Image (cartoon, rainbow, N blue to C red; front, top):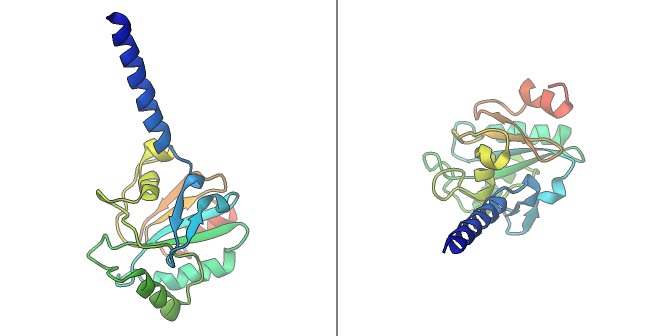
Length: 184
């Protein structure tokens, strides 16, 4: 009987470890859908610094698209990438469909950095990537909460969370520029 109890306890620990191992993904393990429905594999970003930003087209911070695009034109390429994630989590400020969002971004801000399909960045329906970004037990660095649209998560060249930048911080702020250029 003791053998069965010990075996059951050991099997339970193995199962818990397997579940934990599944959740402790690397940044590079994530695959998401682009705004036009294609698969985007984060493994293609290995060796680059990456800014993940949740966006919305009816927000007071929406004009940040202009400076996000400016930043992308200056630094985007082999060493830096911006990835936008439309989200409707804050006062319904992104009610549009993926097609409408893509058209809005192109017409109003000439966005060329990768935009992904609309997701949830908080709550019960939080996307697994944002769960990783916001939970220390998953990202290994810090807990955070997405406070509003245009919060920025900075990922280093090794796929590690480096900084969380508040929504009101402009993409061209020295905090971000110094991080990209290595001036920290």
